[in-house]
View (cartoon, rainbow, N blue to C red):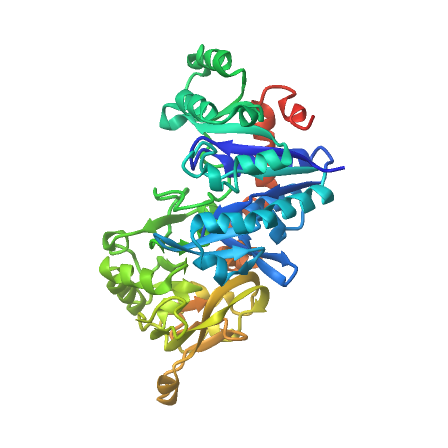
Length: 502
């Protein structure tokens, strides 16, 4: 028998589809069911490396976490189409985990027609392997300008005959109009698939909602099945964008970690654990003023980027490059991850038109050459003793604590980085601190560049950098997933979640 499909739709982007889908995955998994997530098309630069027929491939981070919540092995079928924005009007297209240059060049509507058979086939395959498939939509199902090329919302719902929940962000205002307007713009056969409305991010007295839900049900025939309170600290990374523009920290603050939030930032979800370290303040830096006040004990992180040369240009236009250089000069800790590592070097060289040529920040004597093939793999390596040089003028640099630590992470990059030949011949060498050209630090040990994503999700790294008291404050993913399931179980009307499976 085919799996039952439950689908989470939203009135807008940011309504709460991703975390609610994750919560449902864990809820149904706890009922003893075999559960898998699915999102036909995801547009995001947050990606993870998972199993694929070719060995390893990419899916959106949200579907990766949803698979873990479901107790399922993440694989590329759970997000068959991933769009990774590189410019405002251009995205790299990843089909079943692999970059597809032909689809990347296709117009939107032509591409949708070309990929639908693959999307339908992968959903059918998941339904054959699992008892329940929890599906996440994208944006709004009522985008009538795109309905003829829809491959992620109601076309998927119809194909799987999914029982659909429609969620809205009541904190933005206009929630009842959003729910009614979305429902009203759907044709009758699609309206029939909507089995419940969900009000998300509610603050205040729930009694003030009346008679809104009752009047909405009179007009649509659909009940409001849950009113979910505002919940800032559920512990799950947001799917897109810088999820928290405010400074985050608790306890007596001893270290500020400033993550440079350039326009094409990628894999920002890997910094979620830092929000839970006592005494650490996490900030997202977009302007020079955000990092000009940092102390030598603070950190600057240059995260991943989907368009390194463009984000490097943005960083210079903001004046951030000068403050990063000054911070490094006075012994402050600087960490570059993937695209951030590439920025720390001397130059970006792009013979294939992948990313663009650009001069680097010159903080590491390295050169990055962009290859036509993308490296996508999970990796486990051990940091070498070179991270703790005996002759450093700054013995307190945090990266020294990683010497000898084994780390597990993932790689997603076109760039291949190596020592600058002329500088190396003159004796100016970066210290290689991970095998296979995966990480380097400067001679002083305070500037570190790594290709591995997921450092702060590794328990050994957290233990080394923050010690047992700090690392112990980071909730495990299992705790987060169970908390999400408990939350929806407490706030959905009795019996609704089970009824969706009938």
